[in-house]
Length: 634
Image 1 (cartoon, helix red, strand yellow):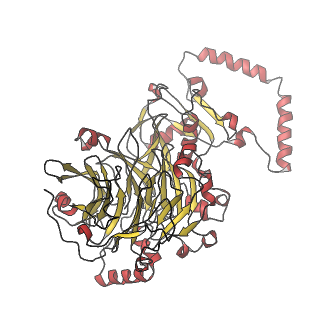
Image 2 (cartoon, rainbow, N blue to C red):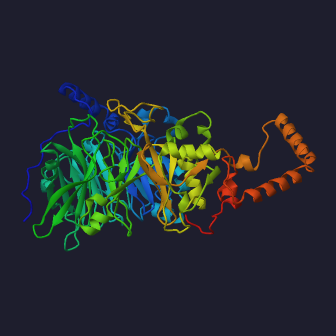
């Protein structure tokens, strides 16, 4: 039979403090937060708090550090392709007027995006559903949209503006939609017709119904749309929303739920230490849960971990809590690779399942790292074993977005989030199996200095070249992976307020900064897209050398900035003509010497283009944006 029922939890609030404080300080903090609801978000950090996969490529992200909804391209290493700022722009300098989003959701046919903060549900009207925008790969209309509060008449006002509103979840077909309140329960609304007077908006689950207690953190529809997964601090409830007669028990006032005691099953991993949990998703017969021990002897800022529980039909119960990614006891960090190697920050509280038929992928909104983390659980789900085959990568979309959106200084004030995602210029690379070396970041940088271009490419530069197919490959096969170091740092911090991390901060777990010695490695192929992984800069990685330097349109079409420069340019042209007689002699001599050296050992200064290397000088001119292998990969 089912597991023994547990009495609903008593009322309590557990603030996400990272250091031990006196109880009176904690009580005063929560008193202040109850009086000023917009400040409650500070205890959860600022960054990507909510994620909603639009399809297997694009993800909507609710980022509180910049108070925006972003559309992130998972195939292009986290490029932002659309955005909407959630507050009125006259309040850019007053973060107390920002919305501070907690979660985001919509459906395939919905003409609204729904966003919660800890006090209110909001609706953003669309000209067409996000799914249609994703099909056309055009999200440009988002920038002009506005946000309105949405609180249906069927919901009591006593739950509004109290700082305890949590997540929103909309069924992918729009058939149902729910909002969770930490101490109030679950409320329904009509996502296809979101008007205050709509009678489908109800208070469908009260605290105590179906043994669902307080401390609700998250809700998610299962892919089958038969259940709603409700995660609390210590439990997860699988709430039925479609019965055998295709009726929704919640509409009839008869909630039914299966209760899983997470703390009971998972604290065995930490010698019965108290744990807290923030979110759960279900894939086939597995529940993937995000949480961590409440306290760690190693650090006051222990990062979260991901755990897997298995459903057994014969027992009709869940067993075998296994840690598959992250640590749970170690410092908050940003590291990718295998599940055992991966590290997360301490503040993620939302995850989702990517709707793809080719893999089982979980997306985590890693708040303090201001990145999305992709957790590939395909092997353990399909093999029912091999939890050591979990792989974690990152979508690092935060390309100075706070400055881009809110700085009055140049060049930020002339840019948009979409502008800074790609960057052209001169680059150098060498393809072929003989060009693959085991290099750490310093070795990769030295190699770039040796060839004269000067430095390892940034992630925006890698994105631009990947989009055109201009990068090193092992064998020019679309299935082969290319791995290169990037200049992108994986350093991050805990933010108590919207903004950005301090530049050049030293790693300090007490002050909530980390990752100074970690860099991103870009891994890509035309079929799977561009991914990044954060690894320690001293770690040797089998990678190609890909280097970038100055360039772009100014290299192709120089434009003098002044009359003096124009005069200098004209003088140079005349000098070039006067040298026209001598140049052919130099060319003939160079060609003869090149033939002489063709089969001989080359000196260090020998030009790279004579070593079968490749260069490209490409600007943003449309007719130059070509794929060197004649294929359109993106």
